[in-house]
Image (tube, rainbow, N blue to C red):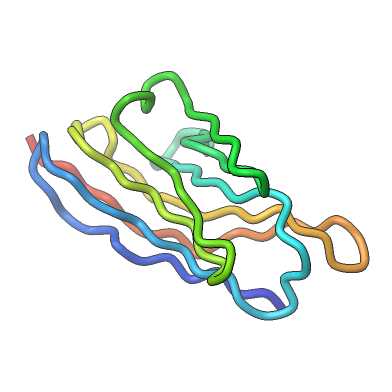
Length: 118
């Protein structure tokens, strides 16, 4: 079994920062990519940022310049540094892992709430 545990969410004022972490454990196999998504009630889950095994990153346009995704491969951990937060960044943030373990597998974390007050 695979477990993704996110942490670091919370309440912050607009303009503030938060750092999310996600640790993958269990029979995760070889990680191809890790990512962060976010979702607000009534809306589709949207991509925030991705990072591949080689370290290539990709960001949604609205997060570029404010958010930074990084990973510690030795710890199977992905981070999301969020700066200059805005009220519209309020959402539940989900960790996502694309790995290979006797086949391609995809895993989601349980989500961590980020609330940005104006």
